[in-house]
Length: 194
Image (cartoon, rainbow, N blue to C red; front, top):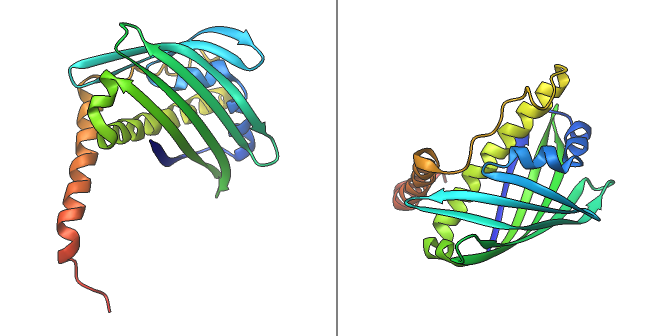
């Protein structure tokens, strides 16, 4: 499943690109993610925990930076993992591209996600909504970390991201789904501006 989204970081492209080069720092910004080891050659070991409704999924696996283009400000990461209780697998290729947007940075993200097992039961709509919420939180966390560094605070002093899941994540994803439904329902009744 291909998921395309973007978010804005209130920092210049050069600072965001430099931050994206520090994988342990980037990992702290992804809700529910914990980096558990550095395997060398741009490969890392970690785990991701996400709660979607009553189901908590915890994947352990590896992530590898397969491309890093300084000139284009583009990074490609391939991740693969298995659910801790053997209830499925996931693989994902994430391509992030940074572009200047006024004084800040627009980060475009394309995720090619393949999920099997328990997570696959939620379907594309719910997975896309949860992904969008997590990406928004990631963008806010990146901004907070860069701002903290600008103030001279150590990473330990910066706000620590909360784990992904719980009532808040489900509610925010459900609100996105409701918004989609209302837009589809009311679109035929919008006046034609001709």
